[in-house]
Length: 265
Image (cartoon, rainbow, N blue to C red; front, side):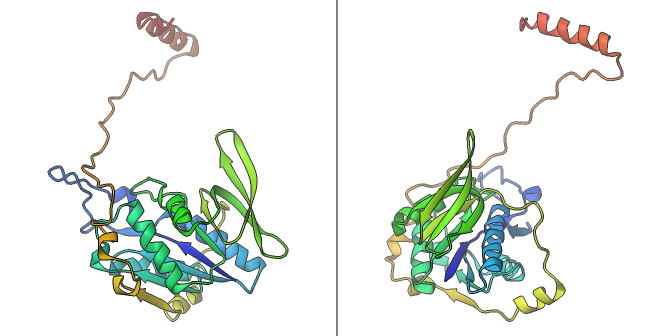
C-alpha cells in the first residue's frame, strides 16, 4: 500500500520581500523551507506507517531543481522515497496547471497509490485549491482540513477527524482518496543524525515534462487559467492609544470616555 504526500517548497515567511516595481515575490537570496502544512501531512503519513509497517510513503513535489532540499527534508522525516517533477516548461503554473501536472506525475511514478495526502494550503500562495483540484482531476473522494487520520482494519477506508467552522467532524472515505491536513500532533519526531545520513541514499526520482505525456499547452503559464497580476504587502496599521501604568478604575474611566467620544456608547 502506497501513500503519496504532495509537498511544496516555500520561501521562509520571515524573509519574504516584494519587488515594488513588478509586484512579484523576490526569491533570489531568500531561504526556502518545507511548507508547514505539508509537513503536517507527511507526519500523518509517517504515523500511519508506524501503525502499518507495510505502508510505503512517497513524497512528491513540482518545482525547480533546488526543491530537492524540501524532498530531502521529507526523507529525513520518514518518507521512503521521493519524486521531483521539474522542468522549465512548468514555470508560471497556476493552481490548475499545478494540479494537472501533479496528477500526471503521480499516475506515472506511483500508479498503484492508495492515498494522497497534502497540506491544506501553501503559506506563500494561501489558495488551498491544488488539493481539491487534484481530487477532481483524478476523480477521487476528498476530505479537507484533516487533523487526525486512521485506516480501517481492512485498509480500504480512511477515517478523518476534520476541522469545521463549528468544531470537528468525523468522516470516512473509500480509498484511493485525497486528504488535506490543516494540523497534526503538537509534538512531532525530530530526525536523528542517522535519519539525515540515510535520507541521502534513499531513492529520489526526477520527472520532466517529456515523461508525462501532456500537451505543452496544458503546462506552466500556457496551461494556466489564472495569473497573479500583482503581489503587495498589506497597508501598515497605525498603532492605537495605549493606557499603561494606570489604576484599573482610572483606566476604565478613560476607556469609557473614549467610547462615548467615538459614539460607540
